[in-house]
Length: 501
Image (cartoon, rainbow, N blue to C red; front, side, top):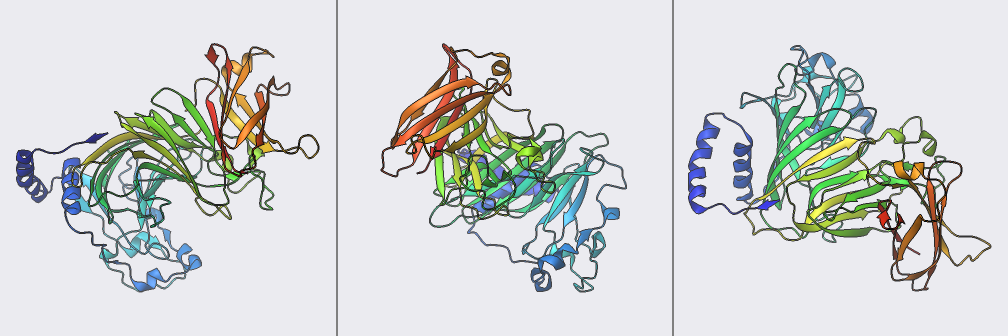
């Protein structure tokens, strides 16, 4: 990650060059970067909505009547490998975005038209102006089936993608500003998009976006390659109007209602309901960490300090249908999302925010990177990363936790809180019962370790680590860490957990 101040001479040169490039109609990332810098130099002014009140007042059922006309799919007639469809403004989508087609570095606005949509029995007025814009868009291509939805951008700076054999689950965002802070979160918005017209036979497509909010403006480029591991290479430059308290880079947003580690299933018939079941990290010191997610009674935030992280993500690790028993939501097919930094991101923290959720309709999990320091206002913040959307391709090379359970005995030492963690992995699967394989367990302030055991599960290839802790009665949350080892070798990732009495 680069925080770079431009030389005064270069600033003068750029001030002359950029307007000329824009006047010639040439568009590229440097043009967009200049526009973001000029935007941040002015006071923030939220754009007035172009969405008519008749659309803003639509009910959920009314809005669902509006569907895209497949005959009007962008680039369909040309038979290009990727095609576009657009989301209609209205209902909760109170503001629209402007979308342009980019060909040979020349941008051509895509105008709104009623002909792009079917309205069912809905009456929205005979004429809607082209300036109304769109709520967002989706890119289609061949993946799980022909003309499958690959990527969608809809609302604020939210977007999500699919890979082979998955259905939509968690989302990503362009930026997170002050999440969970007392003064309230700020939600930057992708105000405008430019989408490159793909060449015949293209294997990837490119999207540009301009981001704006009260604190920051930014330029983004997404180079998307769909597949078994759909990869978005994200290049971004930010300019702050004011440095926010928390600037969250590469944020991921997901849902965790209940799982095998939950004390309550809220009366739901399904054993587990979540889009992701853990935060996975690969630190700059080459340690793999796994943090099972939870649905806490109140908001809690964990911060994992690191320098030059090698990756982090929200993962749906449990792929067993029997764990969910859901024939509609297909939670076992939700993708994971993995952030792989390009270059050195310096010192900072991976933050995990877990909010209380009363049902499965609310995204209550957020993970993002927070730099230790920000440059002075006006200087660029440059960063780049690969965002992987995948099912099982990315995991620690050693063993990994596949289940976390917690509880206590009603009859034998009921004062102990017991934890059972199952580990799997190629090496562990091949090992028979071996007393040389042992556990390293660390218990933080608020409790002491009472016992620990390790054994090979005779009914499947996993290894089970069980331990109990004795709370000290203070009621404080207790940090826990453990892994399996066969000295001098570490055999698994580090399992990390926060237990709240």
